[in-house]
Structure formats: structure tokens, C-alpha cells
Length: 61
Picture 1 (tube, helix red, strand yellow):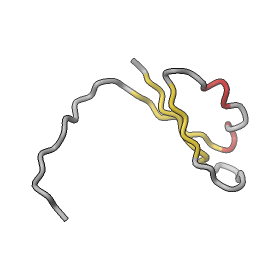
Picture 2: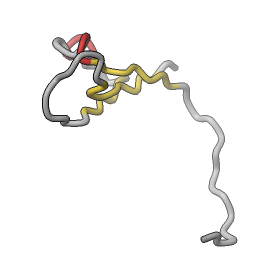
Picture 3: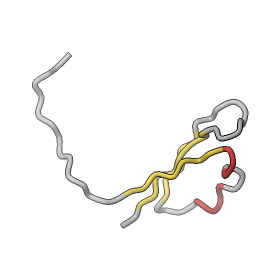
Picture 4: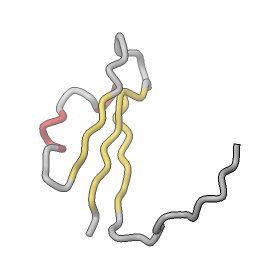
């Protein structure tokens, strides 16, 4: 359904990068703890090879 509402501001205020957390590099998350990082875990049951278990959004500037 389409509503004729105005779009909000979409200007870029900062730059981020996303790092995927795969089962191979999931064992030590402490190296990613920082005020510039936001860690998102997906709480999946079980760890399988090459499975994405979360991601990190890292502030670049």
C-alpha cells in the first residue's frame, strides 16, 4: 500500500562498515568491543561451518 507521505532526511551523517560474524571467526568477540562498534548476534541454534551468526557495524569517521 502506498501512502503519499514525504520522505525523511536521508543525508549521510557518518560512515559505517559491516563485518559479518561467521562461525570461523566467532570465538573471540572481545577484540571487537569498542564504543565505535555495534555488535548484533542472531542467537541461532548451533554453530555450523560458514554460518553467519551475526554482524558488527563499525563507525569509520
